Length: 251
Ligand code: BJW
Ligand code: ZN
Image (cartoon, rainbow, N blue to C red; front, side):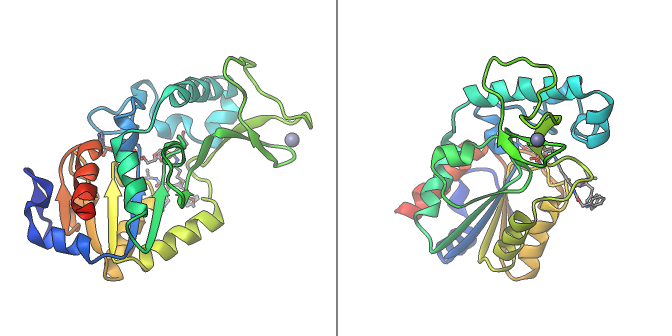
């Protein structure tokens, strides 16, 4: 049965004890953890890219049909990401990593804010918005600098570039997915933070972790499909709840 905490997070001694005895921790983050850095989410109450649903633009067919539009969307988002700073939620996960034997931070986010905050072991499942990928030579390269406005960027080989992210219908990077599977299968505590948990295969990781015996904790202001089987659901913003958990662990 799910449990919930609406007041002080660690009022529940069972949650406190599960967190304290967990030496192997895996965390799955989604767009919600970066919401407090000013980066809009895809879905949910504050879901932003309201004008465009990700299912409409984040796929290869949309790119081929209208590459200028898809590039304009990514350029707009790159701009927001470059101006954003990590928030207390990102920083709490950096601190948590230093407190346990094994800590794997699996993220669906493409904004790079976990690494910028100082997290060491970050598994990026959906790529990184700061990279471009050439459709011809297959090379990955750094994304164009701020201010460049070529509507259709081109690789030095002459091939067409696309954003280096994972779109619907595309396979996730094999090694990243394998690391995520291993971490979910072999952890004592699995946290899902700020994800609507509707996009697979990432959304399957919490269930995998739970089926292998991990305690499953969810942090999100709204219920998600994970809330139905999580051991604990902490309803609220990641930037408040994560620092509270870490403060308690550090004591
Ligand atoms: C806060 C907060 C605060 C707000 N604090 N929280 C099994 C079943 C059904 C379908 C499939 C399946 N397996 C595969 C599929 C198909 C598809 C899929 O999952 N579709 C479903 C949507 C139906 N998956 C794929 O296609 C994947 N590839 C794949 O499976 O390959 C194999 C295959 C190929 C072909 C056929 C079949 C299989 C690829 C998925 C790629 C997703 N890409 C995107 C875009 C990335 C690039 C970019 O950024 O532009 O990834 S889509 C978008 O959604 C992005 C995100 O990473 C992803 C998840 O979103 P996320 O992070 O959860 O954000 P939100 O906005 O949804 O939620 C935010 C949450 O935060 C909300 O809950 C808020 O409440 C909360 N929040 N403020 C904490 N302060
Ligand atoms: Zn090329």
